[in-house]
Length: 357
Picture 1: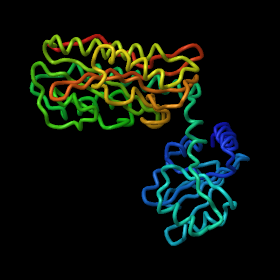
Picture 2 (picture 1 turned 90 degrees about the vertical axis):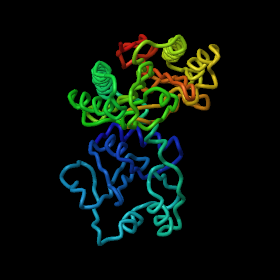
Picture 3 (picture 1 turned 135 degrees about the horizontal axis):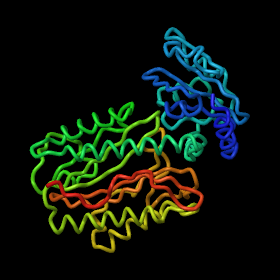
Picture 4 (picture 1 turned 60 degrees about the vertical axis):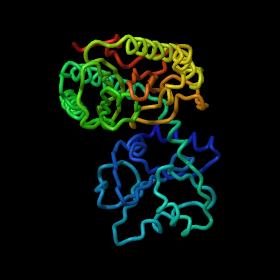
């Protein structure tokens, strides 16, 4: 049990003027208990109140007894898990995890008409937002392993291969680095597919003159990495070179803007302005970045609408891009950690334009 983390969540619960909440996301449960629990269709819920008292409700099938130093209430498939939980809750408002299935929330409200559900996730999300030194160390290691994996993958690009083949090469390279798996499915794009920011890797064949986007991440001791590099198979055209240089400059501007106290929207603006000033603003069609840690997408957004402020210990991506429909696209992505006086870039793979000849 992570007592210090639990205490911090309880303090944030008080700040929300909420005295009880249910936490159910696997990443948040791991953060507080040190144990990954993937419940599938069954209910799991960690009850936490503003005094820092916790109780975990879980099915006996998860075999948790004796593995956790935390109060545990177990049930089996012959029992009504919601009734078991409902009888232990105080009346009034109760925080509900934003990811808790509605089939549990609705039944709980039916069982206890004196409860008022509110979204309780900010207390845990805001705590997970600030990585401690142990977490930062693992984030650095995860990113360095991702650097090595992507560089090896790029070195193995060959004529005639398919996007899916290059994705498989990355998975083998990241496994060789000791990862427990990808933090998300590898996103590999060739040619015109690069103009789709969330293209699903398919059987497209690599051709001379193609841009190649490789957006990949791995998981190392539960912590995620995420980065993107764009290279060119054969000689890059003048337009490809121009677009690449703009995106690379936008990435650098975004990272340079990261300092404690700077709003996320200003970091987004710094990267976006470079692309807009070059005349490609309408082709940068997504946010500049997202938080990362135990999950590859965490709070906060690095976007024009984000109200979050950069603070030491926060980790997020800076990933501007330009996407020209029917032609090609370019994205350059790195992870950063906010420090006391600026930021640390967690990725060190080269960003110079690369042509594979």
